[in-house]
Length: 167
Image 1 (tube, rainbow, N blue to C red):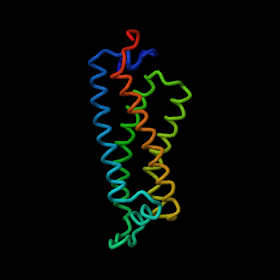
Image 2 (cartoon, rainbow, N blue to C red; image 1 turned 30 degrees about the horizontal axis):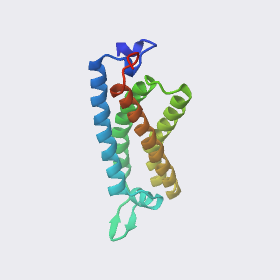
Image 3 (tube, rainbow, N blue to C red; image 1 turned 180 degrees about the vertical axis):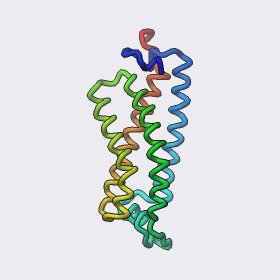
Image 4 (tube, rainbow, N blue to C red; image 1 turned 90 degrees about the vertical axis):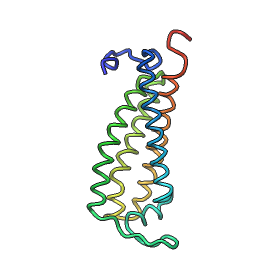
């Protein structure tokens, strides 16, 4: 963390041991994102009607699901809010230490943060307000997933690509 305290910290200029640690973290986050995508595709579905059915209950093909209970949503929200906040914080710190322009950083960080907040809150809206909020869930997944993927890719390139000042 001391490395980040310096205003001029960059991933590509970081010592090799730090770049290896960060690369390992990025690899593990990539596995986490892939498993999240697998859950969203395999268990929920990538359409607003499928998302609404998952949270509100109903029939989908030959499968009947029950509405998610308050306790189930609370349990998922509790776990996701903590984990996703920590992952976002670390990814954001790494991404800010890349050579990408400040404008791109600001837009991507805002988009990813909004997607993350939407991913945590939208299920409550779908379940207790209206099935129409499933579109917010879907949009949040896209914003969060795209932003996270870009932050991982750019940060990994900065860790593994050419060293700063050495070409």
